[in-house]
Image (tube, rainbow, N blue to C red; front, side):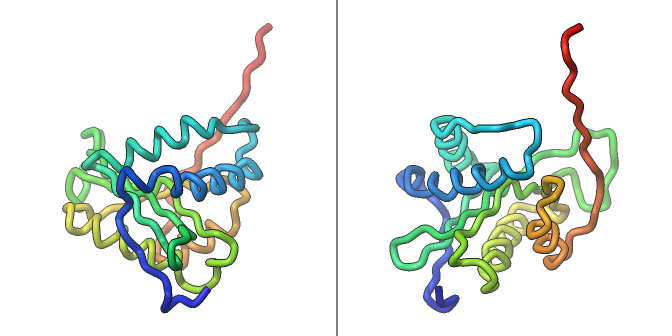
Length: 163
């Protein structure tokens, strides 16, 4: 895939079915790292994606090569709950999903998607952004580090059995 031949655009409701293929590929790939989960619900993923396309506090950008959707990024805005005071305002951004098809990787296209999301965050008054990375997802760790993210926290989990 030639970087010069790609376009990035905001997703519309009519794109949800086609874009959900990237979403499903992302979730299939994440099962490799997502220890407590072993499956996902494709219908629920489409509903979630459509909700993100429709809401004003989220944006979904699609990477296209011709008419083929080869990548997706989902960005969301929330408010801090007041426990902490930030020098960056009371809003924060979250990259909740980013995915590129294998043929679109290692060409700077994930960075281009991320830059588009950053532009949207800045226009929306957001200066602080977070992203969660599943343990063991080294490519994601490298990517977020390459675009300036730092480690903030670590989520741990435990499965409890009935006694």
